Length: 133
Ligand SMILES: [Zn+2]
Image 1 (cartoon, rainbow, N blue to C red):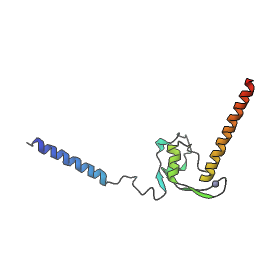
Image 2 (cartoon, helix red, strand yellow):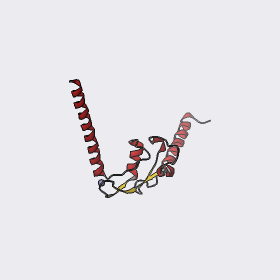
Image 3 (cartoon, rainbow, N blue to C red):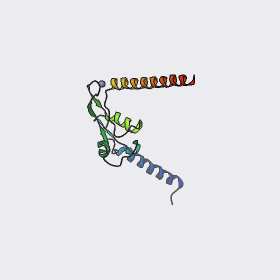
Image 4 (cartoon, rainbow, N blue to C red):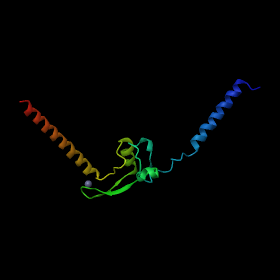
């Protein structure tokens, strides 16, 4: 019959073996994803499920860098796989939308939109003030 101490040692070494096996076996996602411009897609985090015609990145299961031309200034830019993952899975962007503007134009566009919103609100306030009189 084994002593309690021996039994404990056996459990401990078995546990140790298990941990080392987990650490040494490469996970399927440990392919050099970041350096190759490929980022795996986590479909459970996407904004909404679509009934048909899934975008390429969903069918493929991963994002790849996409080269595109800016809609406003025409400059060639790259929408990186990492940026796409952030847009769809963190910012909850619509899965059918893609980048259309370079970064400087995107910032300009955002400012233009917020200014338009501000002017609209100011216009509404003026109108309300006029109505109150
Ligand atoms: Zn641009």
